[in-house]
Image 1 (spheres, helix red, strand yellow):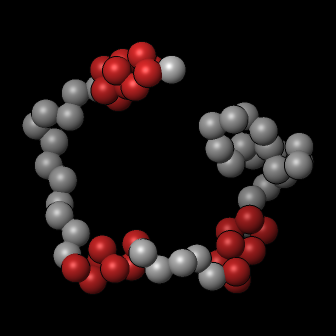
Image 2 (cartoon, helix red, strand yellow; image 1 turned 90 degrees about the vertical axis):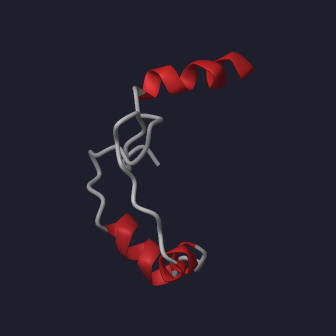
Length: 63
């Protein structure tokens, strides 16, 4: 298992030469706000039954 994490950076590709903007304090705080139930319901309801929501390959119709 640990070996998977050692090879992960090489699988992601080379990040040299890419620029990443820093988040300001307000943007950082927004990342800490819990999701609202309405937001989660809306996001899940908008998924189509034949689409895969994650890396596991299971569609929404599977559940």
